[in-house]
Image (cartoon, rainbow, N blue to C red; front, side):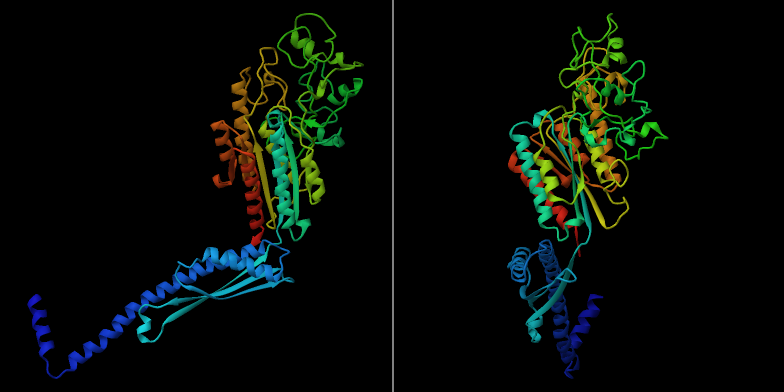
Amino acid sequence: MRAFWKRAMGRFIVDRRGHAAMLFSLLLFPIAGLSGAAVDFHQAMSARSRLADALDAAALAVGASPYIDDQTAAALAVDFLNANYPDHTIGQLGQISISLDHIADTVTVTGESHIATAFLGLIGIDTLTVHWETEVARARQTLELAMVLDNTGSMSGSKISALRDAAALLTDILFDNADDPERLRIGLVPFSSTVNVGTQYERAWWLDPDGISPLHSSNFYPPANRWDVIDSMHYESWDGCVEARQIPYDIEDEEPDPARPETLFVPYFAPDEPSYFSGYSNSYMSDGMGGYDQLARQMNSYKYAGVNPSGAASNWGCTARPITPLTSHRQTIDSAINQMIASGTTNIPIGVSWGVRILSPEEPFTGGSDWDDDETIKAMVILTDGENVINGRSNVNLSDYSGYGYAREGRLGVVTASSNALGNALDDRTAAACAYARERGIRVYTITFQVSSTSTRNIMRDCASHPSLYFDSPSNEALRNAFELIAGDLTNLRLSR
């Protein structure tokens, strides 16, 4: 074969008629030109892709500022273009145009890039020009945000102040960038060992006024209605806290229904614990009977009537400020943030469950849009500074009272006096509550604030809708940055290309 080609090339070279040589020389130039043109066109397509990304970023930046004027919009767009299409990239930016349509509420950015050619210049084409246009419509989507924030005793001092400042920063950014404030609704769920729904709901139908919930009389004998017991005491009232329902309703958005008593909520009531015995934290009156049966002394229903209890009494452990349902009123949410205090122990799942409930269209709060409303973004920010805690006790109750009652009742799925085991059970309910929120379509952001526990950081990272939506904040500055980043992400979510 090699000899064949050698003879053929020999004939080609010595062919004095010249046709073959002339044909080869004529074809050589366009073949080389076509190969070079492919390289130039590939460069042009790469430049157009980069141009498209840069124009999209510029349009989104302008679109995220609803009250921006044309001149400021142009300057902002140029800044984003220069940042996303630097000089060292392929192509040179040419004419750029920014158009704001205040009626349609759209931003249009058009641009071009000039690419110097390497091979097409041989035939007189020195540059290729690519064009791109992107339009951003300021989304008319509604944002519903629940802020579920740790208000426990470990947040006292500078930490609660830093939290107030950071949460206020988030609301400022969201409201400042909301072209229609009615399409922005924010709610607040401060939590400690339980949550506070507000005293305005006293004896509400969903708060079991008739005492039919299976949990209602769990600490009274003979069975008694908690509302009536509270009323029977002098100078005692319900401060607004509620307890977790039975598993799985403790975390689920199951609408309360008197026909299904287990779905009703019950008012928080910390029983008077036995007098004259060690190991108890909340004895606030005489037991009204003698003997050594500590549980019988505690559950005695009759002892409450007509007494003047001391201390926090039946509200012992009810430390959080009331929930603020979804509102478009900026002053309402800012005021609620400023009123947050730090007291009590940590119960993350009960906070998350009520974050879901204020985003829900169902009772007990009905301010949320339908779960399948495509025009609404539902989001939740969950912050904690420590581990879930229920203090175990070496007494008949096995623990202090909390939003899950006493450990001896098994309402967390375990019956134990181990604080560690009870904390682990709360961790499990936290994971379940977060999973339930995500399944409902809620975009979950999580923040740990000055948390040293690796397990808690892992729980909160796994709680978020995506690992990138988890923020570990070891300082006040990092906390502000986390809330600022979340605000920016939520603002961008409301924009559609």
